[in-house]
Image (cartoon, rainbow, N blue to C red):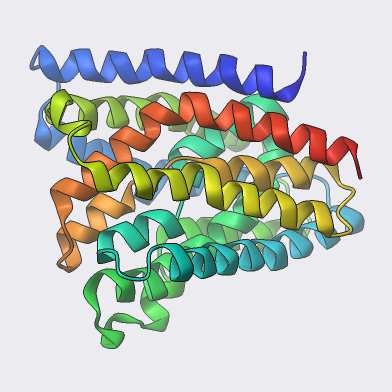
Length: 307
C-alpha cells in the first residue's frame, strides 16, 4: 500500500472524528465555551507534550543532522510560500495572505505523520512546527495586524509549542530518557492530540453555515494557492534538493500540503483581520484537503522515485 493511499484512509478516519465534533455541537453537548477550552488544552498542553515526546528517542548523530537539515529546508519552504503569495496574492486581504503562508501542521500534519510515519516522523515535524511557530508569531502577526511592534522575541520563542520542542530537544541531546511510568503517561496525553483536534475542527464546521462556506469566490483562489500551487512548488523544490531521506521528504510534503492553519481565524480575531472569513477558509480548506492531500502525496511519491 503506497503512502498516498494510507493518507487517504487516515484523512477519511479523521473526517469521521470531525463529523463526531459536528454532531456534538449540533446536539448542544459541546458549546463555544467547551471548544475554546479544547483549543487551549491542545495549544498549551497536549501538542507541546506530543512534540516533547517525539524527542524521547535514543540519540543518533545522523538523525540529528537531518533534524537540523529539516529546520533549514522548512525555512526555505516557508520563504517559497511567501514568494508565491507576493506574485499571486499581492493585492489580496491580510487574512488571505496569512492563510496561504501557514498550514495546519499541528492539528492535521501531526496526526497524519504519527499515523503514517510514527514518532520518528513527528521528530522531524517538530522542526517544521518550531520554524512555523516562530514565523507565525512574528511575520504572521505582522501580516494580520500591519504593526511591526507586535514582532517580539517573547512572541517568537516563549510559546508552548516551541517550548515543548525545545525542552524535548534538550532532553534528546543530553540523552535523558524518562522513566517508563512518566513516558507511558505522557504518551497517553499525546494520543489525545488527534481526536481532540478533529473534534475541534468539527465544531468549527458546526458553527458555520454550510452554505456560506461555498459562497465566497475569492476563497477558492486562496485555497487553490494553499492546497495546490504552493505544495507543487514545494515538491519541485524538494525534488531539486539532494534530499534522499524518505522520512524527511514525506514529513515536509505532508506539512506543506496540509490545509490552512487554524490560527488564520484565531489571529484574525485577535489582531484585526476578518475572523469569520478566516474561519471559513480553515473549514473549507480542511474539507477540500481530503482530495488535495492524497493528490499531492501521490505526485510527491512519483517525484521521490525519480530522484
